[in-house]
Length: 306
Ligand SMILES: [Zn+2]
Image 1: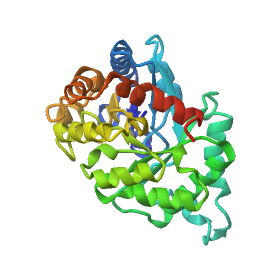
Image 2 (image 1 turned 135 degrees about the vertical axis):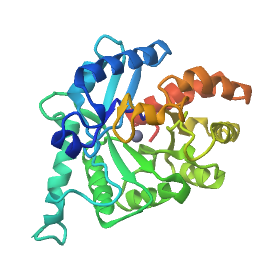
Image 3 (image 1 turned 45 degrees about the vertical axis):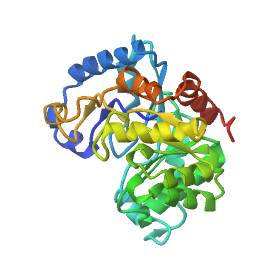
Image 4 (image 1 turned 180 degrees about the vertical axis):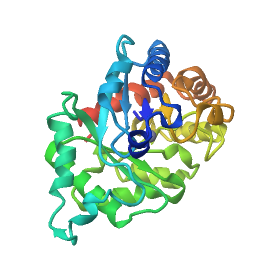
């Protein structure tokens, strides 16, 4: 429910082709092999949460999954921790070209209803990003645009929320103020805290938890993350949690040589090869695992859980 295939800073890859070692044909082949392994592990479908700001390219991803048997869903939104690009510094509420944010909203709405560019591939979800800078003016604008387009289209909302600073609660408050039914919202990166009270509050407010950085021990050791997840399952909350890795086949934030030695478990197959056995050892049932991997995404995407 939250993966990536290719993450690239548009300005750098447009300005300096080949930035960070990018080679289209080589990366397509590498991605195809990794996605084939994911399919073989038993995964039918992934949600690619790459949006503009980090280089969404639906056509390239479609080529990467060709022949793997894997299905991919896409997302829309804009990825920033603080500011929107310059066109939106001149246009919008209180700006030189004063008015509403219908231009911003129309970008998201088109992706969901007509398709991304000319690909004919439609986005399935809206994404909202809130990191350590919190609810900056532009992050607020994005939240309001996401809420407005959600209300018009019914597309569910998936977030990037900095869990240690409890950003999920900020997102819930802002979205609820705009009339969003919080059961249509997945608060992402929830595995990056062991604060059960925070996680319980997010669920009590109605949303799903995106337990979506499995295998990534940057904020917390993997054992602590699995212990927290098992504790949530023991509280009977498996029907509100969805799993993912937030992995990319290619990411230009660091090279594979820089990251792989430190992050050996951060791979598309970590959940199936390592995490599910560890959950079973901690008493999590097959039915709860099935619920997190299949039942909850189905309910969330169809709106049946609302
Ligand atoms: Zn992500």
